[in-house]
Length: 84
Image (cartoon, rainbow, N blue to C red; front, side, top):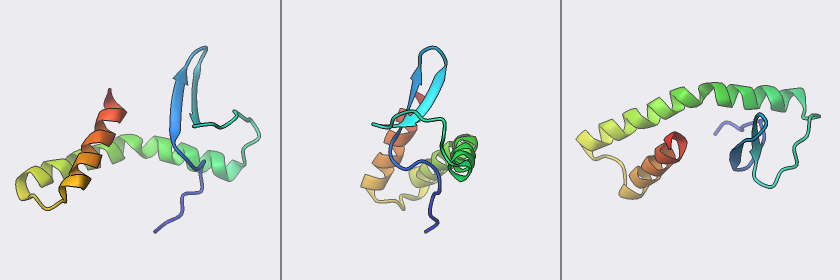
């Protein structure tokens, strides 16, 4: 498994006087390492493609029934959280 070099933990977004994306419980800092900032930007930039891929996995699952039900439910839940 490839190690993610960006900010670890669950992420949240906040809309107030701008937009902030941060990890839960984190204190907003401007001094994050360049590697961490670039890793976060890469993850954010790929989010739409990852969402599309998860959607395609669910479409295949609906036809082939190859995923365990718990995994199918987790994918559906993630898509719902990301799109509502």
